[in-house]
Image (cartoon, rainbow, N blue to C red; front, side):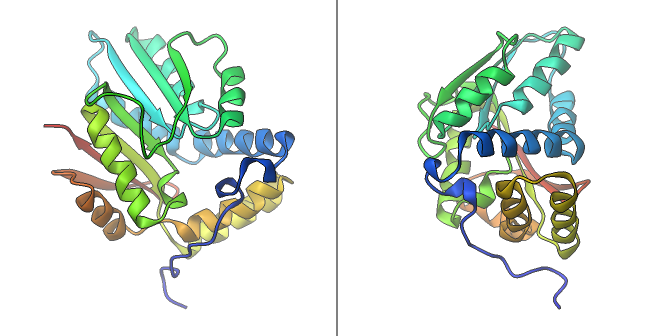
Length: 235
């Protein structure tokens, strides 16, 4: 067995038309994703990056692409409030039902605005946001779509961007498979979680996508729990 699994390209439930999943199933899997983001590194990776970039005396804007239920903007809002940082955030997702769920999650956070939008054709002018982030979405796309998504992030970012996704590994696959059997009965999470790992990237593959998108100088870091983080500054 090779150390790195062969990359898969099959569709996940979340890649299918919205009516394939019930409202209850979608809410359940987004709740599972919030737990994963909180305890398996996405939130930590995002806040680590912002802490290194943002001065507490400045106001900043942030766009979260494919926001899901907007748990990452909520985490950033809590972080910014504790530090007295003025921040305005916009979360976009192509799925109207996800945005409806996100409105419940973000109640009480006036600094977060939500909008239905296609990540491949963001409805914002060039350089609209200081920072643009996207978490665990790139692996849902074909390579050319992934390149287009990164290119759109580069277009609307004024200062920097951050892409968080999974690092393809048999160990990560086994861990996610086990966790989805122990902690959830949601059929979407149980199917999509392990497949997401097999559809994800090596560092070289992610670097190739960034280069094809026109990213100049960028870094790719490994973070705990088999995450890859692509980041760069806008010149």
